[in-house]
Image 1 (spheres, rainbow, N blue to C red):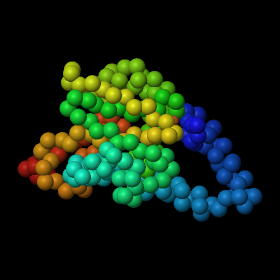
Image 2 (spheres, rainbow, N blue to C red):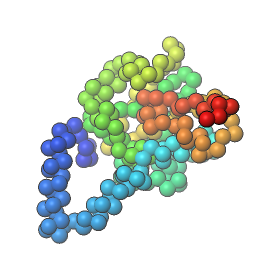
Image 3 (cartoon, rainbow, N blue to C red):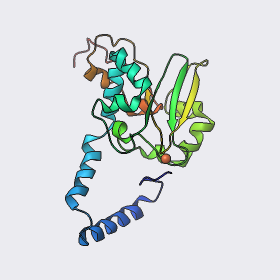
Image 4 (cartoon, protein in one colour):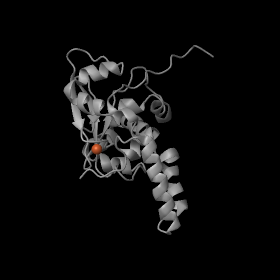
Length: 207
Ligand code: FE
């Protein structure tokens, strides 16, 4: 089953329909506006790619946590307090020197909300959903990522059952950095596989 709310509909129409529905539901006493506000606040402020970045940073810093992620990503991520809808069955895929991982949902827009927040518009676009599978290397180059010739690309198709989190390679020159500082290097796109982690800022150039 693919049942989740956002698809490629025209947003203006969708916004109007949502507003109309909310008004009716509130008027009939079927939903509490405060509860709706709480849900919106959650996805605007509490759930987002910073959560995933903290997971990646911890995996870089703590080998035993990385191992726990490989064995049961759902439990390992839950142990950091990141739980919720569309995060019930997580799999962490680790980039290596030989293989790069890329995540797509070919059917719609399945995405790991608790660790990445809501998906960007391009993730839901038909062009990304089809081309990520057919020509992943070209798609990556359009994101500014050119992989070495010998590196293979593994494409993971998200579903309502399984959501993937890419663990990007740890950048060089980051030894001894705190997990907070490491997390600053982990972009949202790097956790989808459409990017790589940022290199650390070079020291000695005082602003
Ligand atoms: Fe989907």
